[in-house]
Length: 473
Ligand SMILES: Cc1cc2nc3c(=O)[nH]c(=O)nc-3n(C[C@H](O)[C@H](O)[C@H](O)COP(=O)(O)O)c2cc1C
Image (cartoon, rainbow, N blue to C red; front, top):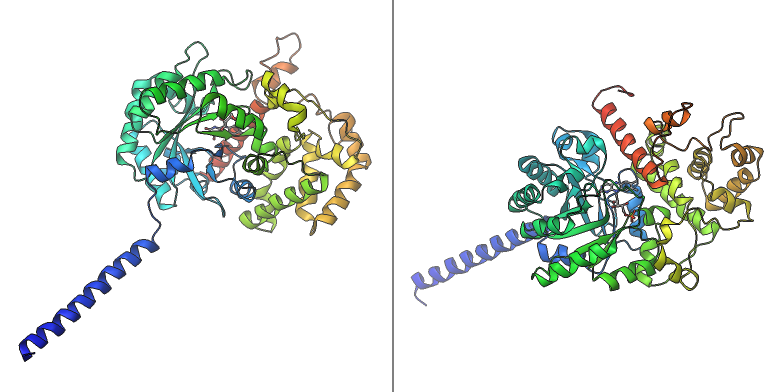
């Protein structure tokens, strides 16, 4: 080979090698940064799944981690006000974090402004969210008075514009969670589903009740079925429709999927009552953990709170916004074996049953099923302070047989003379009205509504305190 050709050949080799090195370095770099999820991968994660609903307060990171242990695959964050997030609110920022084990994680935002929403989604992308869910269902005044949450349902046209704007500028898929309508006399779920899908929503969740209904009525799965049929008939069958409302057992979930054709179900209170509902759904079988196994699970939750908030006084203080509160739902656990309850659940969803209390004989069972907040405080303290499951069971048993617990059973409070049994209403208008003699009592709220109101209030309190304000305002 003549020298010029040889040097050209070497130069070619060197250049070639550097080219390969550059390409490799680039692709390495690319693969080491998290891949931006696309519509298809997220849509398949929203198909044939039981998805954890967005739950203010309840869907805290340690709780979602516990659900992931039980096979939860896809979850949605607590609702985040986009405006507060962009102002740097630390609490809203913390809600962007995903837990260990959460495979597919969506961040739910509340906004009615395209720019604001797009910027909030950018923050969610930075934190690794797989998709963003637009909240169009929140019924609380704090949201609706600002034109957020369920008030977006009043105008399908405006909703469409908002969703389109978010979809066009968002790196991750945008999903939408709606209700049947805002007011009960203006049910417009089909219009809103059409609006969202034409705007490019990657999936649509329908909670089968209006905002005005709260939890007073059973979810209307027939309307959800119609939305699914229409979506398929109109050629949008690739967009998952997720049905939501009143699911407490795997067999109710499977039946709803079969009857309505929804691609997935979303579960809220059912998961709060029994975080192992995901295991039941995945195994197609009821799992009825005994009392000791449940104590074990609850201790895992307490330990996850320690991991997340810290195993010191400050960590305990932060965890106390959540741990005792969880027992408002955990205490409602009842095993509903399929053979005994499947038929009954067709007439009325099991979660809507009023207090079908099993006849507990074991004192520990009685304690774990107790609905008073004083009992929940003690249970949470014992779980937090015990260094093993055995110690926790032992201490809980001692408390279950104590005079203090007997007092709770008779008066609803550990403090003699204080009667909390009947003061189960939040101290809002309804509570005050009930106490004023001669006045018509305020509206009766269901326990779920009370839990949700408490959750929203706690979130508001946290936000105001974090912003340097005072509470009560
Ligand atoms: C404590 C609590 C908090 C909730 N927070 C939210 C929320 O932040 N965003 C939202 O879209 N829905 C929220 N919801 C509604 C649930 O996501 C779900 O739509 C509703 O509870 C119906 O489902 P379920 O019958 O399975 O509970 C909340 C519900 C509860 C009980």
